[in-house]
Amino acid sequence: MPILYSFARFDRSARVRWLLYELGVAFKEVTLDHAQEEHLQPHYLARNPFGLVPALEDGELVLHESGAIILHLLASHPEHDLLPADRAGRSRCMSYLMFGLTTLDAAASQVFLSKSQSATALEKLKRLLHTLNTELTGREYLVSSKFTVADIVVGQLLGLLDHRDQLAGYNNLEYYLTRLKQRPAAAKAEVFTAAMKA
Ligand SMILES: N[C@@H](CCC(=O)N[C@@H](CS)C(=O)NCC(=O)O)C(=O)O
Image (cartoon, rainbow, N blue to C red; front, top):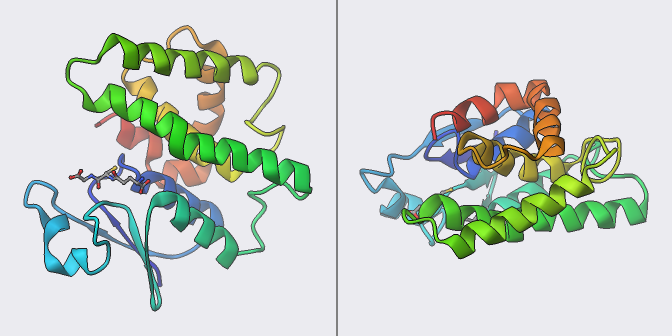
């Protein structure tokens, strides 16, 4: 049974936990105590030498980086329907998946982590949210009318941003988030309820 390492239910482990529930994969979770620097102790550094979460132990394999873990889980459970069946759709899904893992994650982190919230960082984030809001006009999910793995990563970040009141006025994003919150796997993973505690 895979083991997921996390600090809390709202950190980047949330996207992996949500995916595990979408896939119906049974897993165990080990919650590390960040304040006690458990992530910097040898037992964890042996799993992720960078001392960051999430990490996933899957049999002999121990992986770090949420994106790599997500791709590993998709490849390990090919019966899933979280990627579009056609090549063009899959590639567009990858664009949004990478957008979430890199561009949006970095812009959102700048705003979360910096106490002073620089105007430039906020401006950059707003530009991304504005475009994403426009992209979602008349579209149920990022790629099409079907939920994909890209919605997990982007949706998890939007949940955190919503909790920080960053989505007000972006009606399509708010409506999109409402739909994502209705997914049983998201509820089980507490993605959006945990965001409230962040
Ligand atoms: N790109 C990495 C980022 C991992 C990351 O920064 N994780 C944070 C928690 S969400 C962490 O472990 N922080 C620990 C620290 O900075 O002390 C991923 O997506 O897995």
